[in-house]
Length: 105
Image (cartoon, rainbow, N blue to C red; front, side, top):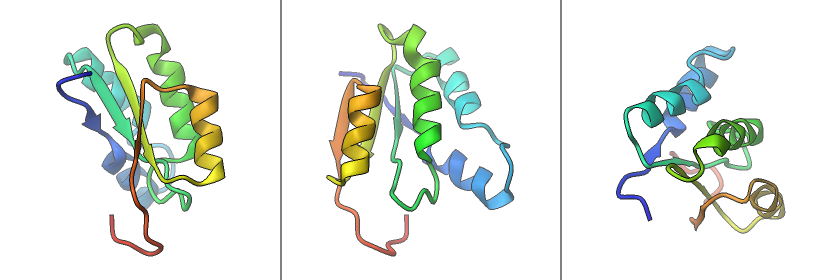
């Protein structure tokens, strides 16, 4: 288990507030990995207010060559599409977190 897992959700929040693809979630993960972070955490919520399903897939693809040294942790609730994403990506860790509709994150 890593000693540190950097949560990059807010990078996606900033990107989504601006529209477009800047800043890049994968770019942020790259900076973290290059700095020596042993883990990356994201929470792909159903409403995609920050991390999207595609972000999670892109991060998994980026981290695949680093799999021995960098863990991917996906946070989410027990909804069918999240469970499907877990089966597809097969992250090192999945953290189950309660989600309330309309909550501020």
